[in-house]
Amino acid sequence: MKCASAEQPLTISVWDDLTGTEANLLKSWVGPALVVGFTSLKPSSHKGFSLSTTMSTSFHRNPVGDRADALRQWSREKRALVLSRMERIQEVRNPTEQNEVLSIESIKLKEVGNTLQDERHWIKITIPEPERSKIVTYIGCNNCGKRTEMDVGSSFACKFCSKEGCIAAPRITFKFDATDGTGDMTFTAFTQECEILFRMDASEIYDEIAAGIFKFEPIAHRLSTRPFLLQIAPGTALARNKILTWVPKAVRWN
Ligand SMILES: [Zn+2]
Image 1 (cartoon, rainbow, N blue to C red):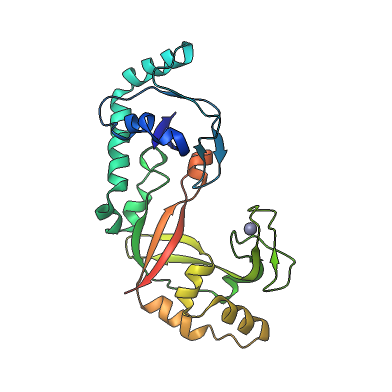
Image 2 (image 1 turned 180 degrees about the vertical axis):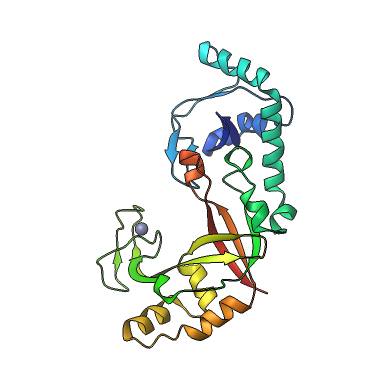
């Protein structure tokens, strides 16, 4: 479910018993903006920032009080904004738009005000001058990618993602300037994208670099001459700080 908090929509995940009749009211929400209340939501950093219901959450179909009245008034006054936001959410959920290949020029025209955290776009790019020095290898959590001092393959409780049973694994980052003829953009690819870009798995890349036998030239040649598809999404700074950056989500060779 999406709701408007100030200008950027916010996702609230509704769990357990609240998914019954009350949530149906929200699911079928297509008409004018609804003003509803939730208590005891807990924040989550999933997809930037979102809220989630808890065991003690109650749902108010018709909240009373000054703040609810102020919000009702706001949604009446900002009706055009709320409607355009709802429309945009529908567009983003529609997968046909998400498969379209956009130009870097059109990505650069996107603004905080009309971009949603869930957006995904494909661009078709080359990396004219891939730099070997922009590849960083390290040992990190297989879940969140944060650095760890643990030995490769050992299982540990990661203090960054607070997930039990994380495994210390080779991780790769690669920063590059991409172009598609309409503009240039800088991205940092993480382990999974690097594996596809380099056509090697992370442990091979890590081991070869450590042993000094990594051959970047053929990879660089391919990256600079063969266009590939990069799926990008707004970085989590959008929901957190209203700053629009674009981060790679997937790579596909044609
Ligand atoms: Zn972690």
